Image (cartoon, rainbow, N blue to C red; front, side, top):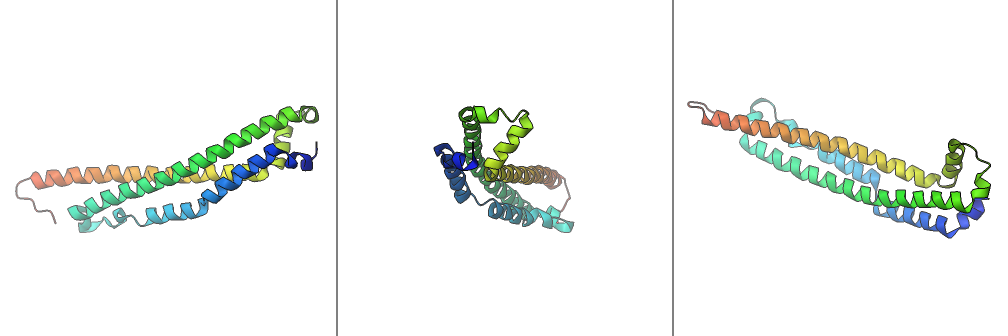
Length: 172
């Protein structure tokens, strides 16, 4: 088993084509920057002092939080689809490698040794999968924060309703 021989195989070529396709369709760095920009521009950050009682600002915040959450969820969904294609292709290639080159693989006794040779052959695929998983994890943190913001805004709306209903109250 030589690396040149494996890399000339149609299975390896197919794996590389799937990886290249996913890399072309995804720009994880750009999508991450977009998500952080959306998160940094939240109007809810302006809600302090008298602004926290401003119904128009609250409504704008609610709409923005929902819009940003939707966009970030779309980015996650797109990344998840392409990442799953690459992961499935990687698993299929691993099976091919271990079955097609089973005699050669016998010299690698432990799972760690077999994983190491697999990583050596398909390092770029593993790197892409790791980057994709890290991207999704970052996005999940942002989505969770947006959900918490939405929940807090809902409480603010409830408080405004109570204050509006009380006699003799003026909301600034």
